[in-house]
Image 1 (cartoon, rainbow over the protein chains, first blue to last red):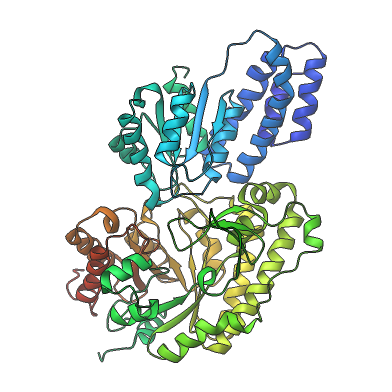
Image 2 (image 1 turned 30 degrees about the vertical axis):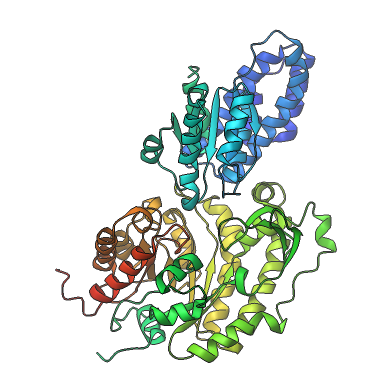
Length: 212
Length: 355
């Protein structure tokens, strides 16, 4: 019988082959997909986030573990979608206008997906109007604005103002993040949450939708 | 002390001796800011350096020595000389959108750019003719980590390959290092006085990759550049944003002569840096271009500049600069205030500093 701690450890080690093999074996043994996810994969990726926050893991380890997790989630998805599981929270994310950096955003997406979020990625250099349009059309719990340059931080504030102007501000919780950003700045521009890095984005997002 | 030239001022402070005043230059100065200060949209970067009497001029690789091929004119996407896709938005520099190498096999047929192309040195030659002996002429390159991530593999693939496929990183590093060593050798032949290598090794929180991986992949190619510079009797300076304290031994181990920008956003403090490494390396920075230069008053900028000089100016070994660059968001009047403050408070022997 597969011990789900082994699944967690394989994710922590960033060992994609072992993660997939163990997940397949667990499913073959009749362990429910939801249990593999909740008791194997998610504790593993949470530990990876903790190791990153404590300075023991760095971007390469975070990415390799995140990839192992994502591949395993892909494997589980067809089984999960057939079972009666609650629908995932929805996260809309994009890099603000004038900014085409996306590594922070992409790592955040990977970590969110690994933690069970359904993520829509608008891409980079997204105008306030485009953000408004996406919020209006979709049914998202959280909008994440990524600003990787000091000079593009004002675009995040402009996006929030545009949402207010369009009467959409209260339709979503708004999170901001990116290398030059701070909690103080996030408070000032009226964001609901601030995350300095991807692992903390997952925690803040969960807190904002009341799942922490 | 007699008035020194900008070149003398910079070389003196790099030797940890006091010049006539604290020197100043910038990695990049956005054209919009330059034009606003000079009230002249036709003036060149070199004209601005003369106008503001700045001690050094940078020959920036991506804007002065690289080639680009347009891929999508409407979206302003170009392919850089290494094969990476970059998009130009509101800044002078393009932002990476995808690497040239999709798999290791692509490297077998990869043809790198030729550093011996004579046109690459045309601008350097013009600046040597105009400034030689008067201002430090600094040749610049982005480092192997920067080019490897942005132009070759894309950052996510690069980070993953550091763990999963180290041979690929070694091969990419070798291609870039060979180019850069030949590039800088040519720059010295044309007349460059110093070298500055950019490329962040850290983020606000700390290094991007572990000490072990920084030591394995990132520091050795840079050390080769430092050694080349020293073989020509020229200083080598390094820029890296972020909190570099956990890997400071790796920077110092290369023999680098100056470190920029002692990033205040990452909690790095000039006084702390002066006490810990000020006798080993020249400190370059760190007036905030995230806050004071962008949103502060001219008086706040003046006081912050004075504070940088107070913390690290004594005994030389300080080049007062912004905490990254004079980007398009910097208020022109604030940059002028910073330069004025350096000229006012930076005159040696800095008697106004107590203790």
